[in-house]
Length: 343
Image 1 (cartoon, rainbow, N blue to C red):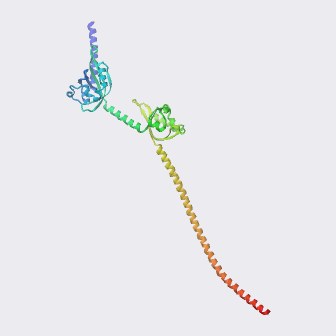
Image 2: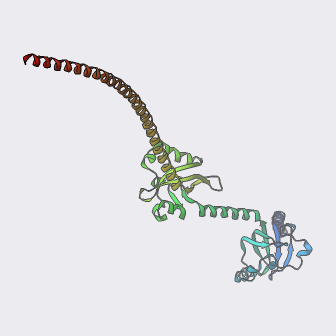
Image 3: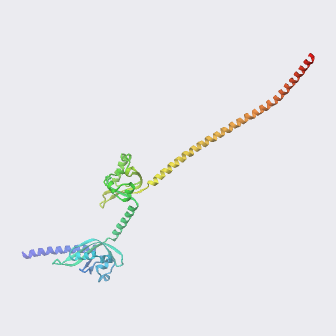
């Protein structure tokens, strides 16, 4: 009976050890593994670790954990605290910046695991790590791009109901609000009543909630009803599970440009109107000149006719004068004869 129980326990322990070995073997195949003594000296490393850090097995001999870190870290109080916690049996995990054999930065998602003996004393530290350099660099590039966008553009975030979640300083400056004044308020705050009450506005938010994005020029209202024109895009944002969680709007203030365009358009309209009026007056003036010239020609013709008539009258006048003079001469002679007869 005793032997049977012992055999059963032994079999169970053997199975347990086999399972642990299987787990360790799986970790060895998939992860970079390195072991350190309590002073940080390398005891062992697997092929994945050698490949990740760019060392050969011979090159790694005699190396210390310090050799994988920048001096700025190893000379800091944080580094001493790090090893103090490991020696005390605490495990440490996180994303760590390390240096490979060529001095190049490597980012490791890792856990440092103190290994205890049967008395609970720390024997060594085993590190399991994954190379996440590419991921970290991509995230850094993304953050850098977002920071550049945040510096250059007005950015505001809405939940799926249109409530303001957050806004950057550029947006607040353009619209004239503080964050406290708009946080939790609806997108309608920035729109004209004629738009808010339209089917177009309802459809706009319905389509955003369906994952569509919008770009264009949008007329919006800032604080105190001041008109602001924005060149903007409304972008649906998804979480890691592919679930739509919010809408982010990136915008540039084009108010000055739009107002200048409108002023130029009004100026062009006025110029066209003036040009049209000028053309109409010019056409009228041409007609007036034409009519005046015709009238002047007609008057000239009348004057010519009058001149001829006057000339004719002048000739007749001379003839009449001659006749009158003749008659007067005859009369004078008659009077003289009558006087002589009386004497």
